[in-house]
Length: 453
Image (cartoon, rainbow, N blue to C red):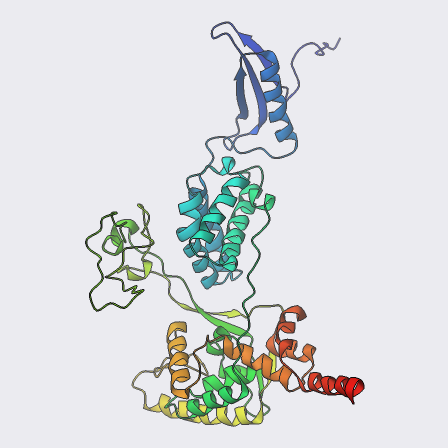
């Protein structure tokens, strides 16, 4: 006859509550799941009354049943988790091509400057929305724009999302607050006259003058222009396939002790009565020379940065990546630009034949030895060109804005402008419609005729 076990062993996940005479307290145990080593994950709660412990046990059971339990053991701090997230998750995404190297570099920079100093010491499972509100307020007080604070918020939210998926924390607190609103910067395109002055000055450059013709005529981004290769340029038809961007992979320490490796470059916090940094009598008001002002952003105590100065550094290779957006940007360049590119191609071939050493990357715009151009050097060349042309100072991205504004000014339909600039959403392109197009001027004349004609 089968034995009746209805009054025997309790079912799995059954919690227990009991009174202990040894300490005079009520104790409760809740089985939350299984640990990594296969043993049961049982959590303990205690209190002075049975009701108090019962409420604590029911709360734990609710979290378990809702799938919001944290893993056994001490939860990592925000700083520890950000290190894990950047060094494992994001590094793998970069290796697979899903994340751009420059994106990871930006993540690391904002984590080091803002997330770790303001939130790094909080335990991940004890991070609350109020902590984020206070941190973002400090960022605003430090002079950060809303767009920068929004980027920090998005980086933190993505890291917390991964933490939730991996049972490091029960919920993503970044979703409990309103994300900072992005600050829409006003477009500052160059006028038609200034654009022509820039092109005239570019024609006098000893090399790569066509670089700026491409920027103003096609409106492609800096990375797309520097990553443009001759195999994607048809000099017969003028078809240009700006499908790729060129980026440099992040440098990494190759030494055993990154902190000691960069010791000489660590920026220390200045004392309140610092006597090392002082202005000179010749300094102008608002002088911010490095040797005259105190360190604003000191390195953390366990700084492992300055990778690019490591004698055994790794990384730093150039990578071609698909451009932003899902569409493959195919453009038809004007005949004048096509002539300029043919001339540029001929000059580059002669340069390659006369070079002592040439690194062939098939790049349209490159250094005298064929190597890719660094973004900073390209930016400096743009600034020097504006000065030579005698026009106002402007960002390199203003060349892209200029291309969009000139297209709208010539009466090109907004959908066509969207296709040329490669915008994913037409709402982005509509920012250029503040330019008075011929159709708008004609409409204005018609309205004037109707009311006062």
